[in-house]
Length: 319
Ligand code: UDP
Ligand code: MG
Image (cartoon, rainbow, N blue to C red; front, side, top):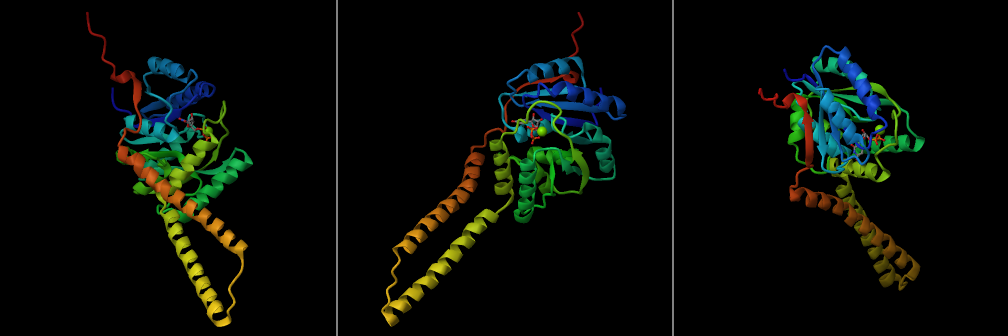
């Protein structure tokens, strides 16, 4: 059996409701395509019966290759596990398991790959999500754009097609706090965006909690920007300058006019304000230190519990 040209990679966490839809849509895409395609599904430690459903499909359809992680590691790590186990010779097509990213777009993305692009990323034209979430995303991407040292395209997520060599580089990057869309931009080569309408989730509830989204946003900011640290330095310099000027003014008043400033309230206010500023500064520095702390442990990114890949199974021994 020859190697697949394309791997469609989708991480799944408690996707019992959307799973049947996912498989149906993926089968239709594969059946209609002249390309050799494998599907790599990653179970990110689901607590519902997603893993059982995956086992079933992997055992009956040899185009499916399933990886089961030892626990829930989060979307970015699960995706990294999928990228590492995909065997496509040409490109990897990365989608969400809830069908928010239509797998039918594979042909459009692949056409761009054939034109010579190493990364074809999707740009969300319209999101079918709540106002608050849309606003938060939009603000985040614009903030990232202004402070990041890599050029991360606006409104693009992980939905993309990446070439074999980009996937190899991604798998070689050992960073523990992963922000894949940023890492993908950092890698370079020729990249291009395709606009699409992001669908609503096909079934079930979102698996990304507010806390997880915040973590992702922090990973983006602290892994791809030195701005927070620079901000602290700048803030320190500004504060120092103001304090120094104020000291001089007070000394002049005291020695030339005999006018000692009163103002217990002002003093208190300044103390409280700058204690706050110092704590924020410490926290910002702490974010970087924390990342060093986790990285220096050198732990593996994830642990695989089981892999089901029929094509690699040994043929039954003749009796
Ligand atoms: N997901 C995952 N691990 C997690 C959370 C989510 O693998 O801990 C998967 C989830 O099953 C889905 C994709 O990541 O396929 C995107 O998650 P979700 O739809 O909840 O995020 P949203 O689209 O709301 O940003
Ligand atoms: Mg989703």
